[in-house]
Length: 496
Image (cartoon, rainbow, N blue to C red; front, side, top):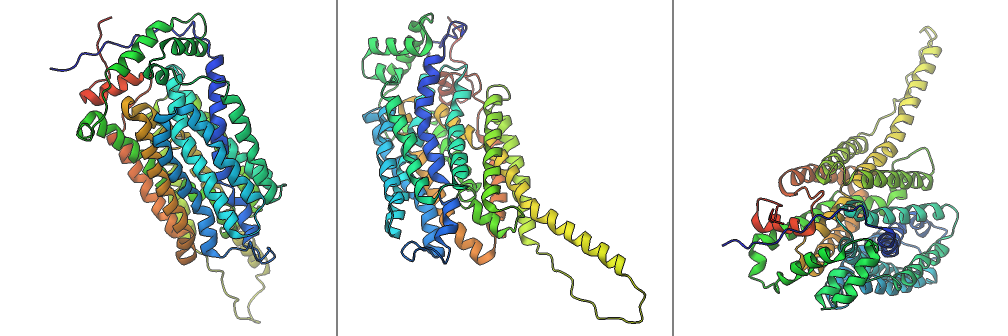
């Protein structure tokens, strides 16, 4: 007989005060600011490390540069594995706070580096911190939010990561690479100070049997005029009906379907190529012969990325998750396809014509032809910037923030801590392999090969969204779980 679960009441949100919720979210997502900042750190500094004028102890060849760009993802995978244990042992909030330790150590090593080993170890440690926050922050935000604002707040981790990357690009225009590392320590310290005064997740407090503390926390998050008892009862019921997960239970649709969807989303998110594009943005623009200096192009892309993620946050709870994912996949497909064709087609300049002293004077026509060819080449050199901007825009309004949000929404409540760690680990291992191989692919085949791969993945992402991903807009976490339990409906029970 099917299990009957009481309906989670939809309370009026008119009496909710979100000031405490917003403050707690801001404190948490400072960890994502650091992740975005540290992810793109190689973009402005790699040209210096590969320059012949660099200190020989810090100079990098192709293989060393590939490791410097990709070892961050390997560290993030390790951090995701650590978060599997930390999320359930010490809670989401303390896991986020602990990420400040590898962040600070990593930046200290890079800022004071006198050899390549210090740079690589420092880069690895900042990746560990990114993996820890990636597995903890979305879950923390989803558990302290109510369903009316969960979509918008769920995009905040991606927004602050984008702001962190933009801050790195902007500082990279004027600040030496060592001071870029020093500046990265500031948000980590601020995050720890603010989070020390923020509450733990009410869901975690109830799971520990601390009902009174959970009630105080929920009232702080929702305001004194909000009836917290109804929500507390719904959360407590959800916890009480969640048994300890066994390996045999993982074979039931309630667990394996949302876990596979989350893993698939995180895998495809990385396979679109976003990490190597962001990490090697300036070197990519340098190879593309764009007219502006690559560091300015990178800053422009950062601004566009910030604008697009703001659009996604606005539309998240209006247009729906699936509609944004469709739009995102199509924009990325069109831009990556264009980049594939542009990078594969190399125009051959016409050779000099033999002199003909008897022919009439066509100087004016030749001048016109030269001008036309020059304009065509200029347009072609601008096209990589335009396509990259469109690609980043498409990613940042769909597959960037929505993947994080959906992961925190669809994962089973009883397995959320461990499952989110597994998803993040798989995601960063994928990013490591792709980022490390990107440099070698470009050196061997040019930009054409990776762009072609990203184009194919965008098509797969479009199909995956159509077939596998449910629409979770305006659904509570309990209703989403009921969808996977029954396999057919979000509705739990219409009785009051």
